[in-house]
Length: 251
Image (cartoon, rainbow, N blue to C red; front, side, top):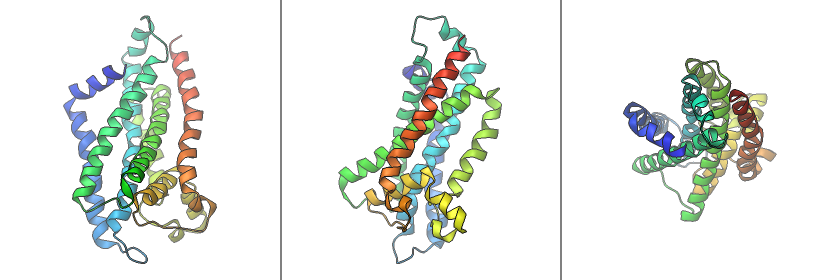
């Protein structure tokens, strides 16, 4: 199933262009547009502050590709076709998650190269840098299962965009990707600090050695713990939901 999904990506060049152009646009547009006009409190390079947020944000928006791919498989009767074959019922969703993780690794590689070209760097050694990339991929793996569940429950593939963007945009806006939660109204700042995306971004900024925001709240002080805990909670919820929904489709 993993090979099948990767082959589909290769045979659809327009999807390949989108998958790899979008992350590059995120880095260049946000890096130069915001990087040229923003100043960090206490100094520091805003582009180095921004790039870990762009890495995590790109992983979040992978939700749409996953949900759309799964919804197309359901629409086109792929689920029914595989049901008649001697294979594990979970193979389709498990293969999809593995293929999307491989694609995320390729996207992350592209993002890192683009980041290095615009002046972003890691400063705390290759071990911490790889740990930061691992946290970002862990978030993407958890989000992939959210996408699988959405793809299985939407009535058709055309409705995926209507659901995914309104869900993903607030998570990005109400996070620490672009600005500090302290600059938001009180309750919005609290929402931002406990946002799973904020935890991953704050933890990776620390591991990369990039400028961060700090903060006195428990969430801000334990961002590394939350960067691991949030994806595990998401997986604990959406993996069983996805498998149960898939099994119902197969009856």
